[in-house]
Amino acid sequence: MRRFSQGRDSILKGGAPLAGLPESCRPQTLADGYAIQDAFVVAWGRPVAGWKVGCTALETQRLFGIEEPFYRPVVHD
Image (tube, rainbow, N blue to C red; front, top):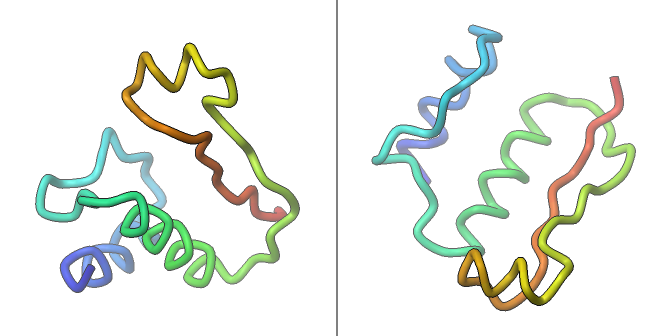
């Protein structure tokens, strides 16, 4: 998480889309992934307007090898 936190500020300042997180910054667990999302929401400084939920169908979960749907915040413009 420390490496991610250091890179987060430069990512936010640059404004360019990412093709993906650098290998050293990729979450190793679901909890890590949600912690990264939380860090971005705080850094953006915008209120959460809603949530996007993915992989709600069991077949899709099996396809991706996960056991539950995942979610992410949608921030207000």
